[in-house]
Length: 364
Figure (tube, rainbow, N blue to C red):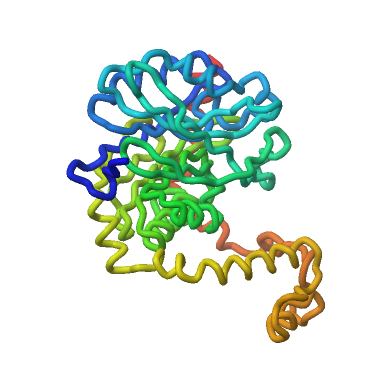
């Protein structure tokens, strides 16, 4: 396979499509995605759409009606435009009698789309405003895959908030990690100019990119659903942690970046952390297996040496005086803590206006 990203005579032209789906309108959203691919595909090699682009994210009990198979997704996109871009689409998937929050990489070849890889979201948030595990099944695997542009990996939203999936993809040879996301706006710190969760996304993308010497692209949903606003703000980060592109707030559009493969070689030469990880992986695998066993059973590892076994004992005292496993989460903010009202009021107003505009338009 000619790895364009690693040999890079011609940079990969990536486009992240900030997309605002109409809730539960699978047919209509497919048609709109098809139009965007036709409009933008000539200027891009790869177009990435956000999580749940076919239906919107907060479907809850409607996921059964809104879910489609990969074959139905390919059929709905119709013929691939001549010289068109490959496409990544997030959707609720029917697969093996389950329903998954999935993302598919579709290659445009000989006038049609071919499914190269499907990633099924592993970490389903079910806390706060999220109820995902009540309505979808978790995926069970993370793997990189080959494309005509190089070896890539896919994650979906919260998968990226855990460090291990990105590390697995990098160890499996991924040169770019693509992350379709539907992350509602949360936290509005004064002076930031954008929601606090987007700052967290910047940290996650930069951290994974620098640690593994890979490109990281996060494509965010926009619009509002059920009182929650998706802010957009997609990002593309280079393997040295540099910001290559950022999407606007609350607007549909395409965020474009050129991924030059030589940047991977330079970053890994300057900071060879992935090579170090490969070297120490056999030892870390043993530690990981031991930790997983302890987490499931609370029992000590009889095969470890004495010092490690003592440190891993379930009844060992905790350094910071906690109660150990089963400790309740910290309590929420105190009523007398005025700092929780120290908000970016112009940003809050902008979000509220956008929400009202969307709701009025939707309801007529």
